[in-house]
Amino acid sequence: MAKAYWVSAYRAVKDADKLAAYAKLAGPAITAGGGRFLARGLPAEVYEFGLLQRTVLIEFDSIEQARAAHDSSDYQAALAALGDGAERDLRIIEGV
Image 1 (tube, rainbow, N blue to C red):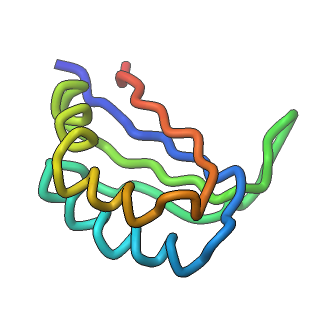
Image 2: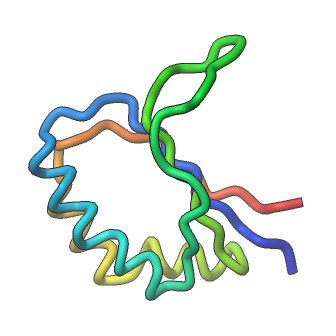
């Protein structure tokens, strides 16, 4: 079974306090759902049409596990805390 990855790019942070409240809840919810944080922060370099924006990469054992972590009540509470505090692009992709 192929691994799965959450790739989250932050297009804009509108409220740092809401983002902090989200992070406090999201980290434990994601790790409880089997996620492993592989990278997070600003890119060291951007090329081609890349954007200098905060990016988070999280590994899961499967697509199903990644979906379940996202849909869990604990992660949904984290999203509620974030509200309109950030604009993000979150994708779940299957590893090769």
